[in-house]
Image (cartoon, rainbow, N blue to C red; front, side, top):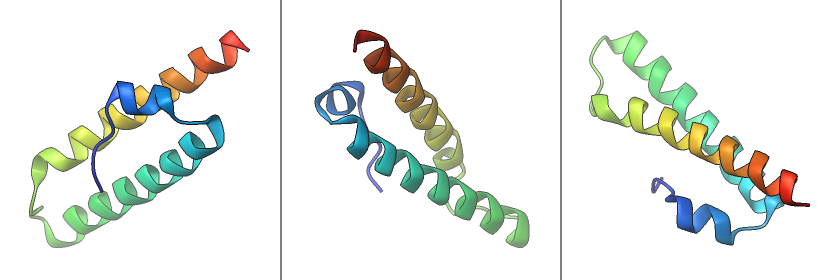
Length: 68
């Protein structure tokens, strides 16, 4: 999954953003479970970046809903 940038998120509809948010949360859960099961994550920075992207998406959704 490609990490979303703010500009890309702003250009999307709220429905599309919600779908991406669900995908990001699933990917985060998968990475966390993999790292806890094996003890070693293949890309340790991925979890941090996913968390930041999820926070970015939630913030932009809130701002978009405020504008409506």
